[in-house]
Image 1 (tube, rainbow, N blue to C red):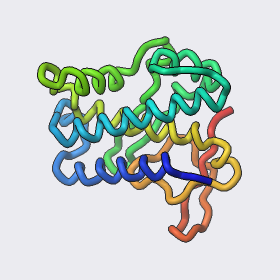
Image 2: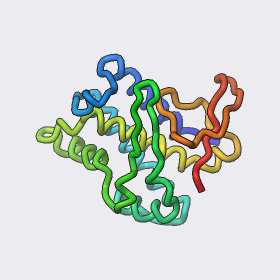
Image 3: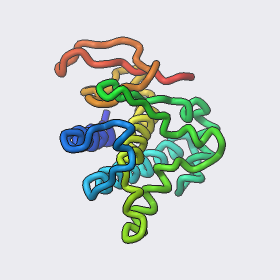
Length: 186
């Protein structure tokens, strides 16, 4: 099994952990923006784009943008918009695709596009809140992309910062230590 996307997620998560040494992850800092936040936000959201396109292809659908993903994924995986990801260390939680339940684009997705295409006028959209939502969205995207592997072998090593709410079905001993077993809702 190739874990290219999971390993990339772990790399981006590690970048966010490094950022937490300089910006406290708390609601009071949600509007904080910076070059580093912009870089991690764009890397995370662009990887979600790659994963969503492949997830649509896995289910036999063709998609090329967020609107297509929203329509197709919601049909195939109706519980995805309800997946909540926690950051227990900071007592924060995010439901990154909750807007999909109302057929709307996530705020962080739009923010990424503004930062990517109009940074000179929308730099403030590279905010901590948008980054954390995007990072949580990347975890959700990976969990769905690797859903068959989750059911069979698991994915190791596990995330260090993010914990999906109500999706851990147990732990397994691995070469990395005890690692969570994830189970997606049917």
